[in-house]
Length: 67
Image (cartoon, rainbow, N blue to C red; front, side, top):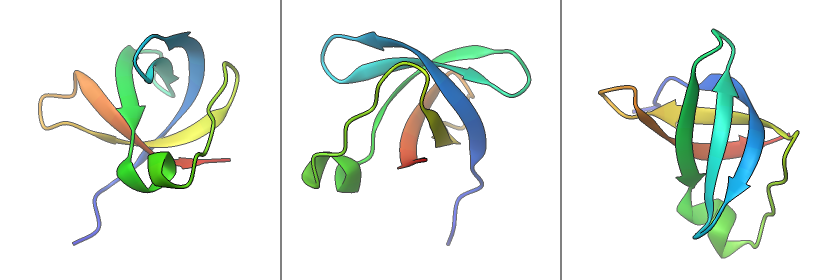
């Protein structure tokens, strides 16, 4: 089943492959890279547009697409 994604902009790169991203609604969350992005050595920098899958609580996210 395909998860719903939300668009965001990476605002800050944190240690241990964590990122701070600002969602379209203005909320900022902490997120990490999905396994496929890590496996293929995809880099994320501050200012990148990304697609996230939010956790059920909506406090954390997983970056599934950069571009």
